[in-house]
Amino acid sequence: MINLTIDMGNYNTIITFAGEQQGLDQVLPGVAAKLGDLPGALFVPSLVHIGEDRIRIGEEVLSAGLYEDEGCFRDLKDHVLHHAPVARNVRGLRVTHKKAAADFLSELTARLHAGLGQAMNVVFLFPNLDGELFREHLRYVDLAGARSVTLVDEDTAVALGYGVNLFVDDLLLVFDFGFSAVRARLLQFQWLGRESYRPPIVRASMALPVGTADLKLKILRELHSHDDTDTSMPAFYWKKFSLHSRDADTWSHVRFQELLAKENLAAQVQAALDGAMEEARLGGLRASDVKKVLLLGGGTRIPLVRRTLEENFGDRVLGDLPELAPGRGGVQFLTESPVDDMVNDAYTLQMRDPITGEYHYPVLVEKFTRFPTANPTSRFVVNTFYDGQYELQLNVFRTQRDGEHPGGREILFGDDGKISFVGAGAGDAHEPAMASPLVIPVNPPGRLGERRFLLEFKVDSQKRLLLTVKDLREEKVLWEDKPIIDLR
Image 1 (cartoon, one colour):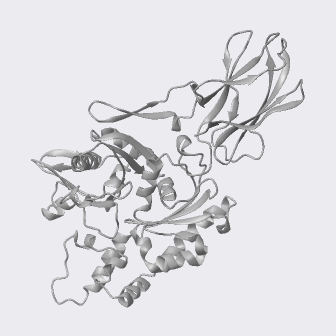
Image 2 (image 1 turned 120 degrees about the horizontal axis):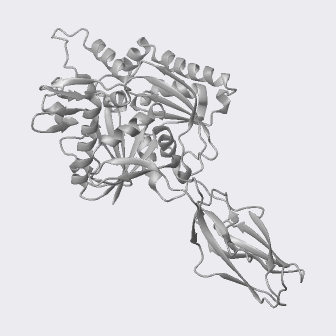
Image 3 (image 1 turned 90 degrees about the vertical axis):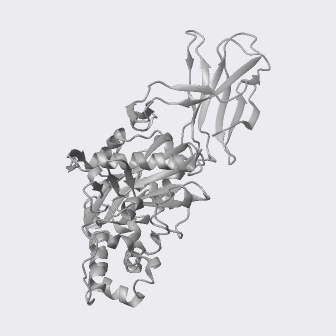
């Protein structure tokens, strides 16, 4: 079983794997691009060619010289997020771009499954804006090679990928310099852990149509402006260039900086920041309220871009491996390790009503309680039920409360591998958290309806549930901070 994230973009689709994976270059031969300095990931050009006999994806399209063919589809993410389906005729058949994007993801998932030779837990990243369109699009994707599918918005994923503590650093700025635009998004997170996951609220945003695609074309034209040969280039030629340190052999550092200055890139970065913060100020937020700035997209590797951001936000800028942060965050979303020191389940006490015989479950420790707790998480006064009662039995349960399913939706897989979304089930679910009930001795024996014990519950630094028992009649403490179970 292997965990991985698929982040489909217009330019590249990035597959990020959990941990160190050996032999990744053999997983998608001829399909993925070779990028040795970004370990644990595969980059597949977001291209699909629908031919008469087969479907080609990624590098296969370029190596076969099919980039300009009528059966080649690109800019897949933009078309998935387009409300109206756009189509073209391919050898007499009407094919929509959304259908082509579904074929791309279906083929990619099947090739991954075959190359890895094992079942996969797949995370798909979707954008905050128009994310519902992306989620609905997955209905038409054949995901037979996936054991499970999880959907996470790309902003939450990039925050987790950078190791941000979303319980504390809840107001973040994501600066995204990708294929089509420069974007700045100010986000308010309401993070309560994976099981109560919700996408963040966009408090402000700004986008300028200056992406790496336009910038690369301008730079290439400048570099070739004095060539005596034919300066026309194949439409895919510029895709072989990226705007970061790996391209030192393509142009000199000084020449590169001169071209960027000519394009006034720093001013455009500043304009995107100013636009987002101006909108934020209308909502009562200031730049000083931003806890972290997260860099996303290969264009943020340009030193001029990062320097402009640091002039505004100082050491709050995080930018290590901006291409891989979302994928790593998506994989982390699947893990069991806690993001913060918290209790991940709600714990309740099973109590039986002696008159009706019904069971009630008052809460001992709420879900997402930070630990250790300085004060008791709950207190109960417990009666004895009959004369001569000599012991009291306590049962602790883990309880999943009604409405805890994210968004009230769950994903189902059909026999054909396609997914559907249904409403999650209702009703609290209780499972025993103890192998056997805890027995508290009653000495001297109790009386009918006597208010006999005060119970206090806490959580210690080792994430254990502690119990203090006070005998109210005898005015003494029977147990003080007694560990009774380990919490999850």
